[in-house]
Amino acid sequence: MNKTSLKQLLHDLPVTIGLLFLTTGLTFFLFFFISKNPANIALFYIIGIMTVARYTDGYFCGIFASFLSIILINCFFTYPYFSLNFSLQDYPFTFICMLTLSCITSATTTHLKHQTEILAFHEKQLIEAEKEKMRANLLRAISHDLRTPLTSILGSVSSMETEELKPDFPECQKLIHNIHDDASWLLNMVENLLSITRIQTGDSKLKTSPEIVDEVVAESVTRLQKRFPDIKIDVSIPTEILMVPMDAMLVEQVLINLLENAITHSKSSKPVQLIVENQPENICFRIIDYGIGLQENHLDHIFDGTYSDGSSSDTRKGMGIGLSICKTIISAHHGSITARNHTEGAEFLFTLPKEENYA
Image (cartoon, rainbow, N blue to C red; front, top):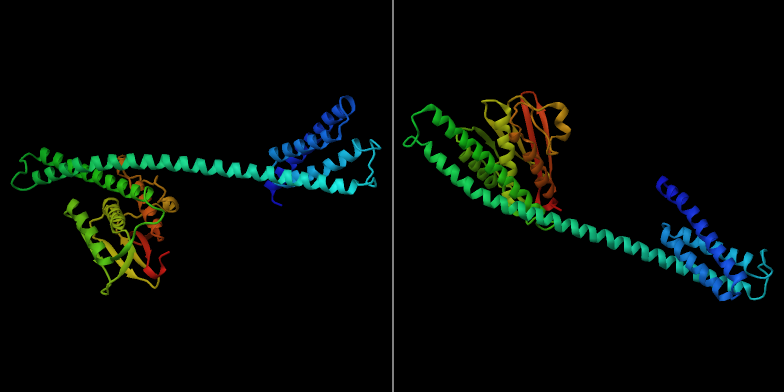
């Protein structure tokens, strides 16, 4: 018996004994001062046993109350009164019938109470799930509404940055560059929000299909280079064709998040490495930068959504939210994701199970 069960039993036993003695007191008063009808005795004790089962946990106290009720009836309401006598004619039969009825009543009441608790719990879960679905749908709708104007802003700013339309004033060029950066960041955040709502509002299992790893990596790098034309990424992929069950759009978002974090937070001019490894049971993706690395005391909770590198007061561009979304997506694919430092910078790696190991 664990501590919780013992504590509950120590709470329930006094309640059981108290309710039975209260029942005995009321029955005693009615039997000796109002009506000596033996049928009322069993009725009152059955009500008492049902009350015990209602206000205690489990079956033990109800069955214990059934045994104790038989003893109390024998002692106070069976002739000779105020003494225990189990040798009376027909008493064993009465004893067994009363005990059986009491146990059935107790067990039924306890079972109904448990069923009511289970129904209440499931109802609460359904309500919470519905609320979460409404929040996710609202978030997704807002994200869709934001993505269109942000894409338009980025297109307009990119046009202004061309040689034909580029302003002559350095201040204007700087402002346009800042607008481009901020719009890119906002668009990435919108993509992240859409990615996470796809998981939260979808089925319990992702709708995955076998995808060619080379194509997913190429698409991720291409999308990122459209936003950051000057970035350098060294990609290393095995020559053989690798197929992995995945939601390609979500995994692309993970790669974009990790590559962007490596480029933005490493503060290094060296190219970021993206290495794909074919392992016996998984495909491993490694994103390696050669910058300042990660704070060692933050490695254990870097994916919890609150991490910031602390290097800038502009906390809105911290990596925490993106990494939290990466973990959610990879976990939904039954994979794993970790972060660590190496001698010259930081490394993020995640694995996706091959089709024969996907479950």
